[in-house]
Each structure stands twice: as C-alpha cells, then as structure tokens.
Amino acid sequence: MFRTSFFFISILIGLSLQAQIQYDNFFLSKTMRFDYNIAGDANGQVVYFEQLREEPYWGGSSTNLVDRFDFGDYRVLIYDVASDQLIYSRGYSDLFFEWQATEEAKSIKRTFYSSVIFPYPRNEIRLELDRRKRNMEWEKIHEQIIQPDSYHVNNDDPPHYKTHKIYNSGAPDQKVDIVILPDGYTKRQMKKFKRDSKRFVGYFFDCAPFDRYADRFNFWMVMAPSEQKGTDIPGKDIWKCTVLNTHFYTFDSERYLTTRDVKSIRDMAGCVPYDQIYILVNTSKYGGGGIYNFYNLCSSNDRQSDKVFTHEFGHAFAALADEYAYEDTPPDQLYDLSVEPFQVNITTLVDFDSKWADMVGAGTPVPTKVSEETKDKIGAFEGAAYVQRKVYRPMYDCKMRSNNTPDFCPVCEKALIEMIEFYSN
Image (cartoon, rainbow, N blue to C red; front, side, top):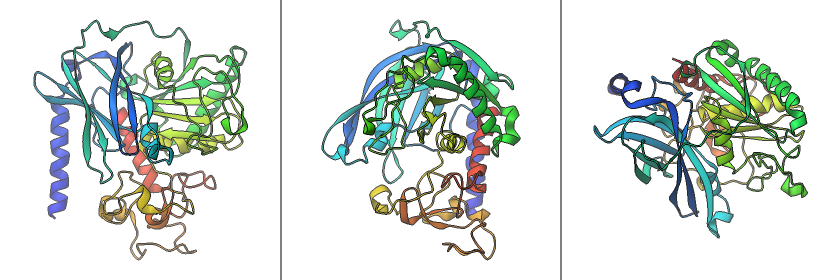
C-alpha cells in the first residue's frame, strides 16, 4: 500500500513540475547544441567543452520537457539560473561509455566527440552532465554556465543540403520526428537513397506498435552525397570516403556499425527538426547499431535490414537492451548484480516488481524455464544483455533477441508506446 501511494505521489509531483514549466517562458523555437569531447580510460573520464551552436529548428516536445524515464548512461540537466529551476532534462548514451568496458580502455586513454541538444534558452542557464555509476546512481562530470546571447554561440548557416519530408502527420513538437541521413550514397545515388528511405519507412509501419501509431510520426530525409559508395570495413581492409565516416568492426565486433563523426551527424541532422537520427548506410553487409538518444544505423541492402531497422530503433528510442547472450561473458563484469539495470526489458530480479512482474501470468514461475508451456508466455528467462546467467529477459524470444520473430515482446512494446506518447502528447 505504501509503495503504491508513493508511486502516485511521485507521478503527481512530476506532473506538477511539468505544469510549472511553460515552454515560452524559458525557451525559443530553435535548438542549442552543446558539443564536447570526453576523454579518459576504464578508470575515469574528463569532459572538455568544444562549442555551442544555434540550430534553426526544435523538433522535440514543447510540453514534456523534464525526462521522466531515467534511462541512459548519461543525462543532461538544464537549470534556469535566475530561479534555479530544472527546465529541461534528457537521458542518453554514447560510444565512450561502451568503450570504457573494453580491454583497450584498460591500457590506453582515448577521446570521443559527443553532443547534446536542448531547446534554445531565453535566459542564462546552468548545464550539468551526469554519468551513471555502476550501482545506477548518478555523478556529476561537468557543469557550465551558458549565456544564450553570447557571441561565442556559433550561428553559422547549416549545411546546404536538400531536405524532404517523406511522411507527414503534423507539427514537429507534437510528433516523433525521425530524420534519415545517408552514408555511402554518391551524388548519382541520391534517387536510390530516396527510394531506400521510403522503403524503410514502410518497414517501420509494418511493425507493431508503430503500425498503430502512424499518426504520431514524421519522417525527414537529408540529401547529403558521399564521395564514394559503401562504408569502411576495417577487418577486410576496405576504406571508403563517406560523408558520415561510418564503419563496421566497432570495438572488434564485425557487425557493429557505428561512426565517431558526431559533429558531421549533428550538422546534417540540424537541417530539419528531429527527435531521432537514423543513418542509412549504403551496403549489403549485415549489421547496425543503436545508441539511446544518440543515433541509429542500419545497412540498407542486406536481406534482413527490415528487421535490423526496427531492432536498432528499439535501442535508440526506448533504451531497450539486447536480449541475447554470449558464451563467455561473466555477468558481474558488466553489471552490478545487487541492483536493477535501468533498461526496462532486463532484470537481475533484485527488484522485479519495478520491472514487468505485473505482466507475468498467475502460475508462471519466476525465474522461468524454457518449455513448450512457457515459451510464448511472459516470465523471466535467464540469459540477456550479453550474459547467460543472472540477468533475465521477459520472453523466450523477442525482436530484441533475434531475427526469428518480427515482433517486440509485450514488455518492449509497452516501453515503446510510453515513449511515443511522451514525445507526441
């Protein structure tokens, strides 16, 4: 009873805070971009400010300004200096955080470019960047006072690329705006990019729950050609000159398709209003990547690209974890098993009630053994998030586990719907 009362009190407090934040009192209808470099190794990091940039559009919600999900490995907090009020926040993840868990990070230091965006403030603000610790608590890693009328804010014109709105359902601040960016499409292949983009929008709306929420989305394209077609495949000694510098073999994983050229991505995406960035890479090699509130990538010509497209969107849009496991990863190497991870579709069973316990049917045991009786039911199946033991997933199979099913499980679908409503209500 106390737990339920506390939950509803928390919701009421959150709604009260939202009600007090009137967009027009604090923000203009454009974007401020904060670019920074994050450097370090497995033992720590330092943030170095790079630039502030003004961009012409704001694609995010003008109502839901303060994050209520608490997802991501980082979060950005924007405070109005005069009132010391939190007026905007978002969680996100990036490649540096992933790199810190690699063997390389134990022996050398590296620098990664990163970036966050938020509505352009009317008045002086305090920006804070926090990093999530292993025990899921937050620690501050950077703080900075920003004067929005300073001449140090870069106000260059955005790149002069043609843009197209290929799916329109309404005003950007009331919809989920997805911008599709090309990589490895030459000038002669811009028509192919347009056809591919429309094809992938079709894949998107063939997938639940997006098929039921088609009126909540806008899709944009930016026509940005590359010098060469394709992408880098370092493990095969294949190197291409492309506009966004994408590559396979990220962290020695052959199918992990990413890029570290965050500045070029943001510059290109800023040509339109957006909530999510999706990079379509002109290659037939299987692979992709999705990083929460950062970017998505997918190869355009592989026979399983339709499945990969929505799988990666699950990562980047709703912070869904991969539900597959590798053979040799010790669970305590990746997770603090004494706490719950932030991702909604995995659990350590430490506080299962905070996850999907209310969706488990009567008579289904937790943990749940795979059998003919349970394989189509919601339970807690061992093996998820790259480890075989002590981390559990909601169902035997799901789009976040394999390409054998076209569907997200009900737990993942619920998370996606909640995020759609957050951005479009």
